[in-house]
Amino acid sequence: MVVVGASVSGVRAAQALRREGYAGRIVLVGDEQVLPYDKPPLSKQYLTGHYDEAKLQLLSWEEAASIGVELRLGVEARALDTAHRRLELSDTSSVDYGACVVATGAKARPSPWAARSGVHVLRTRADSDRLRASLRAGRSVVVIGAGFIGAEATAAATSLGCEVTIVDPLRSPAARVVGDAVAPLLEGVHARHGVTTRFGVGAAWVEGEEGRIEVGLTDGSVLRADAALVGIGAVPNDAWLAGSGLTVDDGVVCDEFCRAVGVDDVWCAGDVARWLHLGHGETTRVEHWTNAVEQAGCVAHNIAHPDGLRPHRPVEYVWSDQYDWKIQIVGRPQRAAAHELLGDPERTPPRWAALFAAEDGRLEGAVSVNWPRASVDCRRLAASGARLSDAVAAVSQLAAALGR
Ligand SMILES: Cc1cc2nc3c(=O)[nH]c(=O)nc-3n(C[C@H](O)[C@H](O)[C@H](O)COP(=O)(O)OP(=O)(O)OC[C@H]3O[C@@H](n4cnc5c(N)ncnc54)[C@H](O)[C@@H]3O)c2cc1C
Image 1: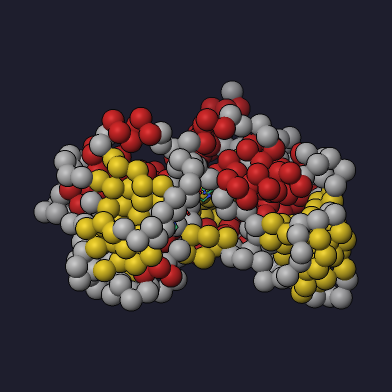
Image 2 (image 1 turned 60 degrees about the horizontal axis):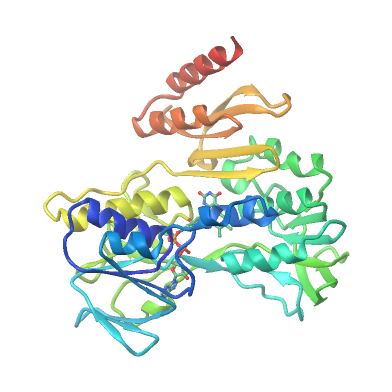
């Protein structure tokens, strides 16, 4: 067994294979020199320096040895020869495999602008270290892109005493994920913390160097700052699979069991996988931590139990920490037909949940702020096909219990 990509989905796949009883050789290949580490804190507590570095680590040499996983770090997978079941590596060696798990994730979409220095992206631990060095109190930062990474980095930079401007071409950037109805409840958080928001206007060019960055906007205005962060999304690490026979289309296309279509014995997990989600009736690629973990578990099960294949059919879940808000999103709220708002957005800090229904009345998703229990319940209820009215009753009971 060879697992390509040594981050959360690769590590969890290797560990789950052992738990599922797989007894053969497992080689885990990763192109980063450092031991596998987790990413969510990189735009949150790790970026502000409030995180125990040891907690980032996903696997030690000792843990790998104890479950019989051979770690090959600092080598890049260059090609997959599916006809001969051989993985070619950057150090000119190769690994023959019986089955392969592709877990090569995604990388930050590179900045399209040429500035000499001072323009950052945020995907790896090294990116976070570089950005942190730029975020000293009193410095100014322009964040381009108000997705999760941009919004979290904005909150982190603000807490470090930086003066932050966040820019996004959409008038309501959060609506991409949570829909128009509740997006304004989320977007107000930046202005409340003294951040300048420039939504509805895009970045046209970025020039200069660390300490003297200029960001030209599409309305003709120019922002001046000490540094900029470009948070304009991620692209799957699938280019190395060209010529492998796998179907690659913004991720590796897989069936509902996360098995790559077109070849035998190749499976995918995490940000690089585009699999057939039976609940949505279409292929889906998800860049969420919980999906990486759950999909790795599903793949390991399916490899170890070929006679009992399970489809990967999750209700999506993602969280984001911004300022003193824990935002949790379940399912696909942006597709919903109706919603109900529970809790109190005006409270300090706020605690509320918006529950969304599909056209047939079933719970389609939920967005909550500072209410983890509501989020957990909604994910469970959405998975069981509950109706919006049942979910509203369940979450109202939680609210009543909290109020007592
Ligand atoms: C800063 C940041 C914050 C995040 N915060 C959250 C959050 O709050 N909540 C949430 O749900 N999700 C969050 N995410 C998303 C979550 O971390 C990802 O979904 C998760 O990391 C995906 O794991 P993965 O193993 O599939 O891919 P990755 O984490 O991208 O790891 C892939 C690994 O494969 C390696 N690799 C790539 N190509 C090759 C190759 N050819 N050969 C060998 N190795 C290769 C890469 O270097 C990397 O080590 C965050 C992501 C980032 C970047």
